[in-house]
Length: 141
Image (cartoon, rainbow, N blue to C red; front, side, top):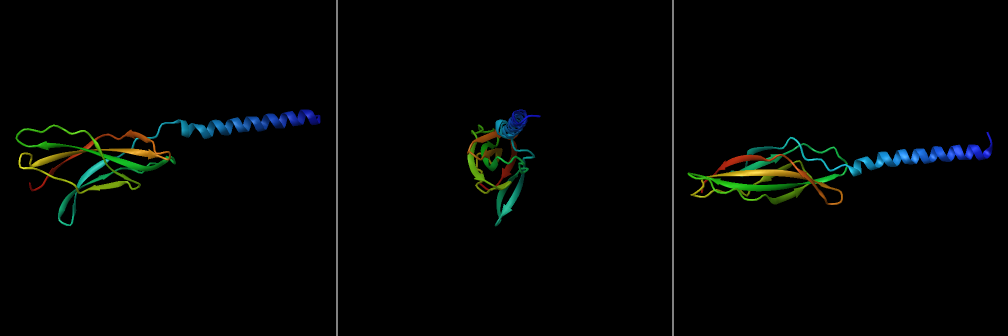
């Protein structure tokens, strides 16, 4: 095999390996961020005050750098109030959020809280939201 043929063959192998590496390296970045999984909500207690604990499974995607937690609420009484829109409550790197800003009123002695969680990517972009979870809170008005 001549030097020219060997050089050409080596060049083609390098180009092929580069293309393979590039295609493999781009696939994760080209895929959408994952939605959080196993989102759960449970009642909690902090210093004698009712809280809600929202938890979820940690993402194994290396692009995920944190999580955004959204909350909506609805008063429950003799007639139900309207459900509010979800609003950003917190941004965290943890896989748990403790909500201690709970309230009820005389008209609505129970408040239903709804939560969504979204991942935050390395560029600050938000991924799709999780399935909505909810819990009823009965406190003193």
